[in-house]
Image 1 (cartoon, rainbow, N blue to C red):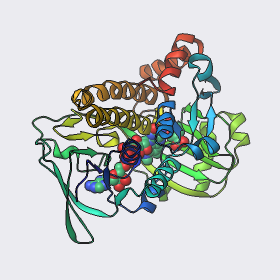
Image 2 (cartoon, protein in one colour; image 1 turned 45 degrees about the vertical axis):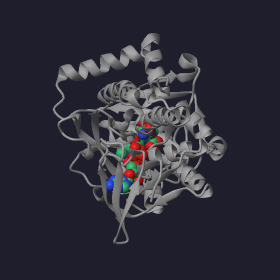
Image 3 (cartoon, rainbow, N blue to C red; image 1 turned 90 degrees about the vertical axis):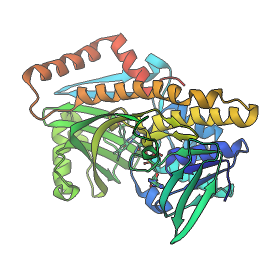
Image 4 (cartoon, rainbow, N blue to C red; image 1 turned 120 degrees about the vertical axis):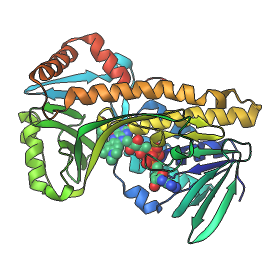
Length: 389
Ligand code: RFL
Ligand code: PHB
């Protein structure tokens, strides 16, 4: 098989890139390890920056998102009995959109299917070959049959556990990593959200987050131990713990119900450099991971897609390699800022095992500064709604 861009990974990054390229008449093939239903079963992000909203519009996939998404002009932060609001509208004039990653992915799959886009599911043994030459190709098997794709470029959109990053030789690849000593236990329930806007809570029992998908679908998280498994937590135990971590007024109003999904995610900060090697480009979680506290993972995948899509357009439409040559540097400049924000916001809100009394005082001082200082709130709001690209 021959294509212009071989895309490894049919998550949001791979799908969005493929659909955007299609709109510009650039051909691609997506190779996905799992089934479509499996990818759509993963409950992940819920907060979209305007940059991603604009890309979905450009991809012609924004209709349902605009009809069903919720625009949020602020978010709440609580600690102890204090709660304050960061006003995104006042500080940036920009809202975020509440629309699940599952729905973004579903809309992109539907668009790819409608356009007759080529997606191979349940592929195995993907190997990237000759990415440092001008004849790169990808080998894989599907249903036990070996196949090969000849292409101009390869986009590695295969997430943190994919193969693309490993194709860059260790002699040129440098990785930066921070592991956090806790995880997030997440629950999805068909109950009305406790609050219209998100609540990020720092409590002495650990972090909690009240989020939502729609008027009757809530997403809640609590900081948990890395040794916990979802089976250790009954629904009752989860709700009781969540209530202890959020302000009393909200706890008293919380509507509980059976969980329809319950999972634990570890927290990690990770960046690999460079994000380009020859004709291979890394995009999204394949190149970087942030702890979910700042809601930046999917949004940073989207900014990578933006830079790569424009670089490829420039190549095919104008014969220019400037965009391609600048991709890694441009993408990484924004990635590191999202890493900083996610690391700072995580450090602000979680309780660390063996946290020294001094460090706890620093956390509270940081929270009080944010509560009372307009410049700090503006900086927070600018980062949360997404730095420009
Ligand atoms: P994905 O979504 O992991 O997709 C990669 C795809 O590649 C496939 N794959 C392969 N295919 C072929 N061959 C191989 N060898 C392959 N290896 C893997 C996989 O099956 C998969 O389908 O990466 P992508 O596209 O870069 O997207 C990144 C986002 O999924 C991720 O950053 C976000 O979900 C992170 N995240 C959040 N981001 C936000 O922007 N806002 C949020 O509110 C937010 N909340 C979250 C989150 C992530 C969470 N978890 C569980 C990690 C909340 C949670 C709990
Ligand atoms: C979510 O709704 O899943 C969500 C929202 C905000 C975050 C992380 C996750 O910071």
